[in-house]
Length: 328
Ligand code: CP
Image 1: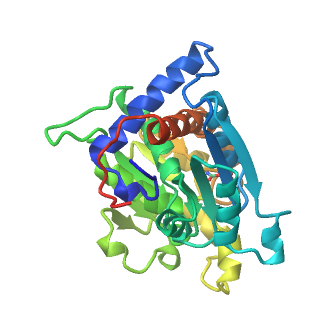
Image 2: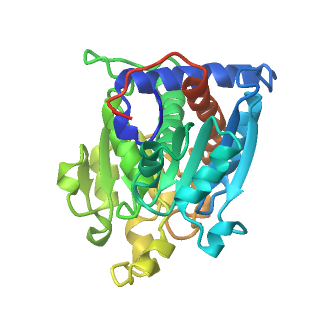
Image 3: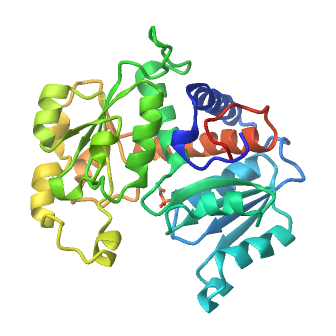
């Protein structure tokens, strides 16, 4: 694996290798071996053109726990505000030596451009691009689902798929969500059934071609589909206003139709868990009751993100070559 650009590029074997490696990384952390020497002398650049709390800190923590040197670049306060391009920014960071570039960018496709441009010699990891992809989020979500609902070693059915038999409902602002797109790709590869639940105005054009079912009524999907997990999506108000708005149900309508509250939580199967990639709009897509309930694994998702990102950096920079569908 040369780069990690999209969850759609991962074969089942790639994904399982990352999840298994993340399990080994988590085990070292549990044994309080906080720092591994694996990436000593390597440099990881965090190149963030969009805001982030979890992803940026988690990649930084992961790289440091593997003993890599870390350069954190945030567009805010940099020469990007003077008009410097992605190309010149990347060339500048490459001149300082980058073995891996973790990039978040508001433009869908920016990580692909960087990976194919020759502006960096390093492995490129997509930390979220526009509304397109966020592959490490999908990996940490799959890791969390596996740990809670399947077991650390995964569960293969006759088709050999790791999350076979699981039903995951992904609920909310699918239109703007790179988390939804990445999860649909990865969960499908891992054999899970996925139902997208959203108001019609927040369902993307062309969703029929996605490997997922679509529902418009959360209560029906909970009652009829008995999902093993519900993944609540953040309502991305900032992307709606930049697109001119006008298609968002009112916040009250949204919460009534699609918000996860105590009543809907109680209607889920007893074993079902609640995920949210963060940051949460408490009171909009998820109530405080639901976010803080025993069923919510939202804080654990953050911790799992470190193990998954350690695995990704390790496999890209120090691991064996794996097979991907990507030609990158
Ligand atoms: N889940 C996620 O990408 O969160 P951040 O925007 O805080 O990185």
